[in-house]
Amino acid sequence: MVFEFPKNFYWGSATSAHQVEGGNINDWSKWEKANAKRLAKEAKEKWQPWQQKRFPEMFNPGNYISGQACDHYNRFEEDFDIAKSLGHNAYRFSLEWSRIEPEEGKFNDKEIEHYRKVILALRQRGVEPFVTLWHWTNPLWVREFGAEENKKFIFYFNRYVKFIVENFKDLVKFWITINEPTSLIMNSYLMGLWLPQKKSIFSVLRIYKNLAQAHNQTYDEIHKIDPSAKVGFANVLIFWESFNKNSILDQLGMRLGKYFSNQKFLNLTKDKHDFLTCQYYFHNRIKFPGKIKNENKEASDLNWEIYPKGIYHILKDLQKYNRPIYITENGLADVDDSKRAKFIKDHLFWVAKSIQEGVNVRGYFYWSLLDNFEWDKGFWPRFGLLEINYKTLERKVRPSAYFYRDICIANGITEDIMSKYKNLLE
Ligand code: BGC
Image (tube, rainbow, N blue to C red):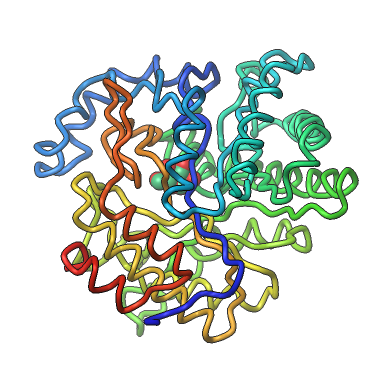
């Protein structure tokens, strides 16, 4: 064994409803239609020449409309068969609130039936469902009253969660209340990139509070319905460093960044986590006040730096909370699959090292099972273990997915696996 993982480790991948299902009518789908042309136009300033050349679809407004996405809504059994054949024993996905409660207070039994089938399909294949209750999208009526910015959100979200958990408590053990509150806050309310495109520190603070209360209340509510349930939220964690270790200002920038991105929501929801999560994508070396100066020796198609060791520091940081940890997202956009296998191996190396040093990591979910709709960037970034042909909706297993399969099955990385996939790892 090159490195080994604990017994009963969960190996899988993750998706979210709006990014893969297709056919959703919610606040995001509405925003996409209104903004597709603008986003296609702005691609020229946003992306570097090599990216523009490689992904000309970024200039097409259609790229920015989720539409039928991967049609996972109808093809989930096919996708789960593939996931199972790839050695996965867990799958993280989200429920789409706008399907379940399209009008205020009117819950749709047919959609509950649909998600019951989805969860049963996983169970029948021996795949543990990790269910996200809210991955950023809202029914239109929720957006009308201001969604997460309005305190009412807490009441309605809680009522929706109660309904869900009552329906599925016999089938689901792991619940994730909210996906990456800080990514949403930063993109939607500080940088003005995502709907409702605000740049307001007051909104930022209000939403931290509302989402934390929403988490805290639903945490209690879920436990009232099912005391044995395991509840947490999905936390994006950035590895922060100061650009100049001797600069007090850079240190301050680093601490502020770390506090707002990694820490604040955890503090606001203290004691309401049965497990912690880590969604790792970013390393930020910060030069005061807010410039990010990374070396970017290696980068993904989105030009996000690949920095595997960061996950080790983050996991070591989480150790003090004394809770089981699940890595509920980690992945990269890599259309030709030339970096994915090495990316997975290198990140898992640092995860394994943290485990050897006593960190209680119990699962790893690669983002994502499928290529999917990457929010304001649309379809061009390709995160999937499976490649999607968006015209025919055909799924094709990428070579790195077989490498990951062998790791899942071996519950570790062996010399044999390393030599079998030597070509992919160079
Ligand atoms: C989100 C996903 C997103 C992924 C890659 C995470 O922040 O939860 O929805 O697709 O990162 O950007």
